[in-house]
Length: 94
Image (spheres, rainbow, N blue to C red):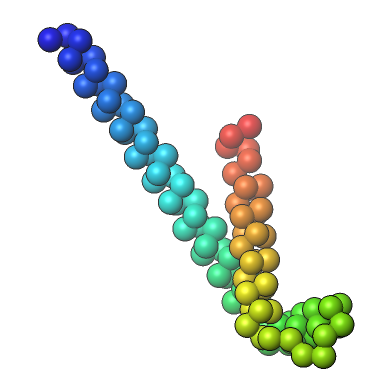
């Protein structure tokens, strides 16, 4: 009977730890997504057009698909948000 109790308690602790890790990961992802969206939304139309022009010129293309620019900018904003999150929380883990 004791062995059953020990095993059941170990399983419960493992489950609680797993759920806690999942919740922390979900919170981290939600925070990064929110910051990424904020960074993207802060770009003005002029900023967007300037970046689009710089990309077009750098690649030597006459035209560029605006959807690809938007995708690239969203990716850049996500990476920057992830970096900021990690820098801000670095002190908590080290």
